[in-house]
Length: 67
Image (cartoon, rainbow, N blue to C red; front, side, top):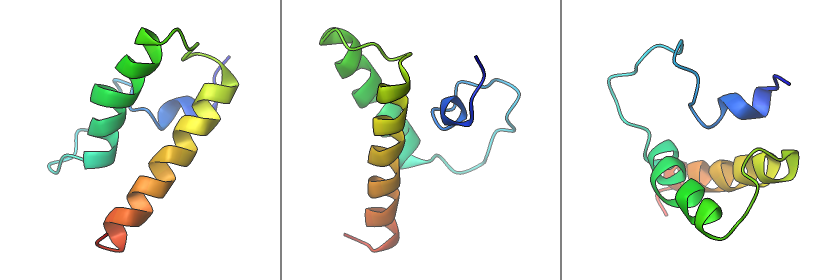
């Protein structure tokens, strides 16, 4: 099943590479997803994807607000 939430995690190899690294995406890929796997969470479930998208949104908002 293809959904828009999956694309938030940057696993789509057809997406153009951006010159600037997104620190939120980097955090999700290097911290959140490995932590979830280590703790037995189903990273393919819709619940995880929606919660992950919520975390990314909050972090991006913090970066925009210079917190």
